[in-house]
Image (cartoon, rainbow, N blue to C red; front, side, top):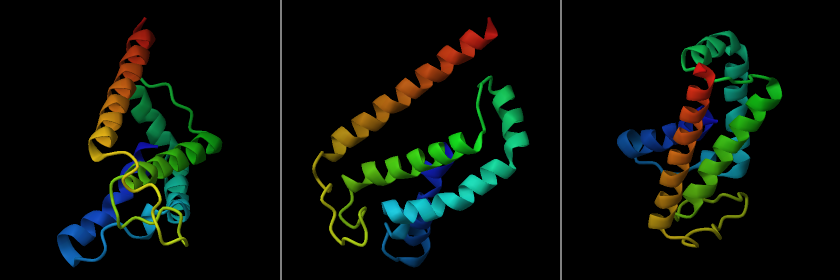
Length: 135
C-alpha cells in the first residue's frame, strides 16, 4: 500500500525537476493507477521472502498473499489519486473524462488535516501492534 501510494509521484517529480511536462499525468487517474500497480504487485509478490524478513525486523505481522498485495496496491494508488484530486486542477481522475469534479470540493488544509490524522492513526496502530507483539 505504501509503495503504490508513493511511487505514483515519481513521474511528477521527474516533470517538476527535469522536464517541465504536465505534473499530474496518466498515473494520477484511476485507470492509469491500475496499470501502474501491476508491476508493483509483481515486484512485491516476487520479493515476499525479503519482505517477510523486513516485517519480522519491524515486528509487523503481515500477510503477503496475492489477494492482500493486490488490495493494498490498489488502495494505496487509488487513495493517492483520490486525495490529490481535491487539490490539483490538472488531474483527470476519471479519464477519459477530461474534467475533475473533485477539484476544490474540500480545501487543501482539510486534505492535509485528513492526511495528518491518518498518519497518526497509522502510527498508533503500528505501535499498538508492536507493543502487543512484545508480550
